[in-house]
Length: 353
Image: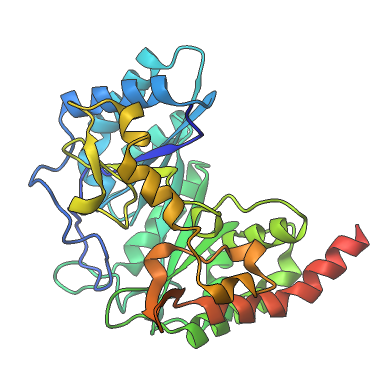
């Protein structure tokens, strides 16, 4: 049997028009092409729709920079989705740096109800530190133009912010700025794996300061981590992969059709096969993927003593570092500090309802 899963696409691989210092995917390119071939694209769309156990099939387009594939590529996408959808409902989301968006692109997104995620790290003085063009020029002004264009066409969008050494101490400023731009759903992810990464104390401070800035806007603005943790206090299981009990339901397909366990694990040990030559169900049920799925629940002993295990489940395996013989999440202290700070507010909110 198959459980629900997502097969996120990297149609431009890691190719990007920016040169963000902290990008974890920039060295993953398996091709010099700007987009998937027609053969890979059609097989992906047909197979994903036919294999999915859900009546609503969500296509997630990421990169690199997926808009490098141009509007015509995405026109092929929606035509193929229509061809193979049967009785299923199709939904598209795209994560983009925004700088290539123009009237043609945005009108297309509006016509076909794409949800657009815009990557932005805060006000210009914080955003332009890391998110630059290849000539080192900042991208902030062009990103804001893209957001204004999305709003003009009434396209649904959200924002994704990477928390790094430049902005972790400015949570309130970042939040208020995103709010002023019209973002009503915000994602914040910690920078890991590079020299400019933040530590647990810095990330914990950011989460607490962010919560304090946000709590007066409850019901109007959603923040992904806070939403997830509030769900947990209400008795629901988290559905964000970082906090679920097991991994394995967020696979990716690369530009050349190769399929991997997760976009944080695009390597030889986590390659499951290729969409053109291998059966997707067999890949999903392969020993490699089963092992990957179950590995997350192999937690260090200290996790079982933690009162907030129900809310974080050890966090993302990619964030776990070897410590005294056990793999412990490098943001464990950040999660504990943030959850301890938020718990009284959550409990008060629950009791009031």
